Amino acid sequence: MNVIWAPWRMEYILSEGKGEGCIFCPGDDRTQDEERLILYVGSLTIVMMNRFPYNNGHLLVAPIQHLPGLEKLSHEETLDVLLMVRRSIDILKKTMNPDGFNVGLNLGRVAGAGMEEHMHFHIVPRWNGDTNYMTVIGEVRVIPEHIRETHRKLRTYFDKL
Ligand SMILES: [Zn+2]
Image (cartoon, rainbow, N blue to C red):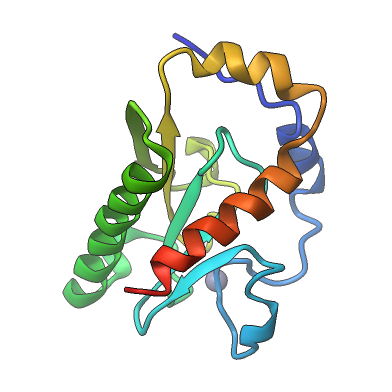
């Protein structure tokens, strides 16, 4: 098994439980969307960049409703969330040309969910050899600017949806 080495994940693990409010609940203030790395807020679904990514372009897709599990969603919400997963993959393909994707859902803390109260899909683009790439740049911590740049680039595509 290849593990992507992501030392900034430590910050996430250490800050876990100290968060104020839920990052997936969009709220009414759209002026903070860029700061929060939000890419899209629809009537049923929200898409944002992961601030603590496993890889560049790591996206999170969640229902607008603050719900813990897939089984709590209505059929309409389930469909909308899955369609946004599909559209997000399409946009990542177009903009970042990955070789593959890991798409997944962590349900419950034991399964690795950091924010188990608000379910969300992870979309992680993968490139051939990206584990090596991550090892090289990991310590340098160039990721935050990388994320802002990627956010701006992706946002133009999500704005057209
Ligand atoms: Zn929430």
